[in-house]
Amino acid sequence: MSESNEKKKQPEVKGGTKAKANREPVSASKIFATVIIVIIVVALLGTSIFYVILPRIEKKNQIVFGSYDGEDIVLEQNSIIYEQYTQLANSNTDLANSADLSSQYQLWNQAYSNAVIITAATQMANRSGVKVPQELIDQAIIKSGYFADEEGNTFSADVYNNAGNDVRTSVSNYYKRMLPFDIVYNDQATTFTPQGELDFVGAQAARTRTFSYITVDYRSIPDTAAEAYLNADPAKFKSIDISILTTSTEDKAKLAYQALSDGTAWADVVAQYSEDSYAENGGAVGVVYYYGMSSILSDEQVQALYATAEGSFTEVMDTSAGYRIFKVDGAAQDADITDENTRMNIKYYMASYEADAVSAIIGDAAVNVANIAQTDFDKAAADYNLTVSTVGATPANIGGSQYMSSFSYTDSDGVLANYINEDLMKTLYTEEVGFVTNAIQNSDGSYMVIKITGEDEDASAAQTVALFYAYYGGQNLVSDFFYSVLYSDKHENNFLSTFLSLYMGN
Image (tube, rainbow, N blue to C red; front, side, top):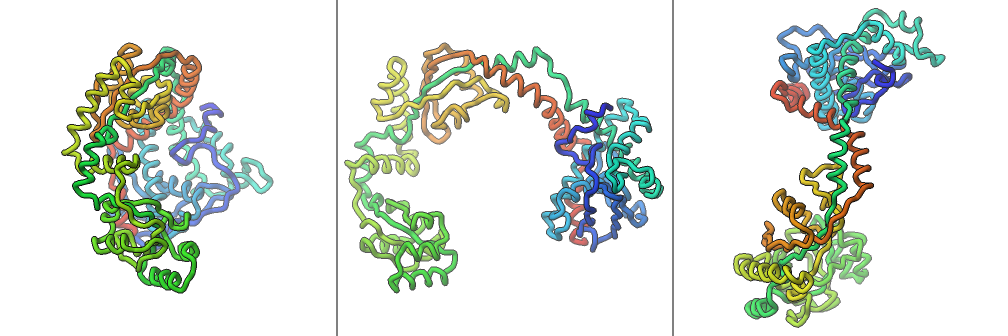
């Protein structure tokens, strides 16, 4: 193994061939201090490896967290899982010294996952005939700093000899296990990406297209339909301008109410007592509608709110969102159908709560918009008071590759990005520039009409994507290898039940 490979940092699995010298020793987890076994940890001088002395455990009482391809992941003296745990504990002292169950689970679960991966890689190395000569093991021990002296020498023969045979054996066995793993890891991480593959990926990223689309939704409902709906139940859309003060307890709300009754300014009481996100703005919510307040207040409470005079506040109300006091900043008003915002609000309500009644109306509008858009895209939007959304240069990223851009970045309005699928992607990248789709229904009941507006070659994108693809390709192979091991049928995972039985003493 080359020195450069030896120094590579492993992205997930801890305990590679390089370790820092002169670290403070970390005590063993409290998790096993009061359960089945007693663990005595003796730190080697200035190292992050621990020599673990365990009582002799009979075979029937061994602590086995799982297995990979028939090989047990067992906790015993200087086992892989315990070596991994001590490496992690040394880097996460707060977690290691915590008696909190979740903290200990986090450390031991990562140690277990690492142990499974190391076991699988070691098996792979053995099957491939990978041999690690003693000379290479000795070099790794010397360079590691595990036997450094106080003068800063990386290796001291005196420290090594005084460490004792058990310690020397422990460290030697550690590298016998880890060096084959490092070989397998480095083989994965440094895999060469063929030029043809890089050229293909670059070409995919370079070919981009631009688009425009019209979203046909509640806004396409005719004004006459909105007016008729309003006339059928005008109280539902009465508006009121409010501020709120919210507390989690009734006692705190009563204190706030008393302060208001004593004349303390609303803003000051909100700053002192309110616990919701509106508190930063003095409790101001703005204009709300009767139907919206009905979702959090009882009918009696809504009526009391709407009857409150402008500038006044209500009594404490027990609501579904906590204990609240409302201040009326603008008196209740009947809905004004001539107001654009009011009409849009009514249409939105209809599409949200009366979908069956208006779905045909929106669908017919979508068909008409698509028909007009075939010859005049902008007119199709204008005729129905809709807007045209534009999408910047986007490659055909069908697989959602992380190496190239996608609609998530180029579609600022987000409708196309949210509802794109493989079939639609194929249409958008195989039809000619200028092509306009038919009305495409979205899962929320709205529709899209899309136009392909342009095509270009982005040479810089091709170079950038190819560069990143080559750089991260090996790392992705490593990640895929780790994932395939942990979720393999060869992996029998009993970690959770074993961990809980130890920690809970069951």
